[in-house]
Image 1 (spheres, rainbow, N blue to C red):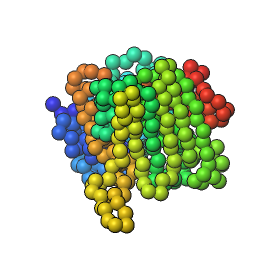
Image 2: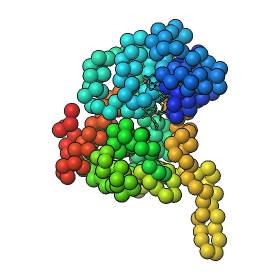
Image 3: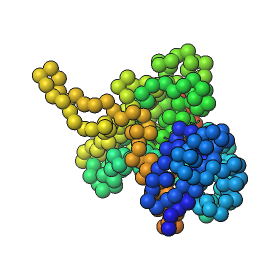
Length: 336
Ligand SMILES: NC(=O)c1ccc[n+]([C@@H]2O[C@H](COP(=O)([O-])OP(=O)(O)OC[C@H]3O[C@@H](n4cnc5c(N)ncnc54)[C@H](O)[C@@H]3O)[C@@H](O)[C@H]2O)c1
């Protein structure tokens, strides 16, 4: 049985998902839709698939088993509600919405639906990051005490993107909040954060945003997670996860196109530049994410990362925004 998945949104990430679905051994691309029709036509012709004329055609189509929502963020909650009403399983890109209130309304509308909803926190499917969690669960580092997540972009996003992003904590750190929950294995109770305007102070000041941020998360048992973010790392897309326990440490390192290093008299350990940005760095994870979605539908088990994970990550983002603004530790119970 091939799962027939339609892709909504043919932008930067939607076209990559469409290609991954078309190449997947247990899924087929049931068609694409984008409000900007030329984008859908381009992807549709390249992958020889149906181009839907309207979004409701996708939800009512009998040849569509499931939908992947890769449209702009403000459409996600509406499309989740429509897909649930149509009984179509959903893989939705992060975030559910930039507003916790809208996420809550969406949760109320869909209620305790049996329709599977998976959220695209793709980093959970990175083999290195997942191996960190597996090592912790296997007891390899003893009792977990501290997690350190380094997540730095190679450069500032375009101004229009920054303006619509909802700010660094909702846009960028949201991945790290989910990674923290994934690795810590228990819920965060307290958040302390600071933000600075060092890369583009003028733009950040205008937007009331930060380009450099540090966050400390604490769980009820006292486990800590330290997240450091920058919008600009001169050496490339820096993605590392480290966990310290009573018996040792486990690290998920950066990835390069190859792991060869050059050693000479004047230097040692010179390697190729890091894989460029998320589509390259997480290529394997994006493909595994589709497999995890197909697995969930085929097995009837809930997707391992779902709507509630999206809501929890947004709660941490709101707590971080409040903490940075008020200069104090914020309890997650204060949010939402
Ligand atoms: N998981 C990740 O690492 C990751 C990375 C990048 C982006 N994202 C998320 O994916 C989503 C898309 O991001 P992107 O970078 O591809 O953006 P993009 O702007 O390149 O693409 C969005 C597409 O959605 C289309 N669209 C907008 N409103 C629509 C509507 N009502 N109906 C149909 N199509 C509509 C636009 O025309 C555009 O083609 C965002 O929510 C973003 O946060 C996730």
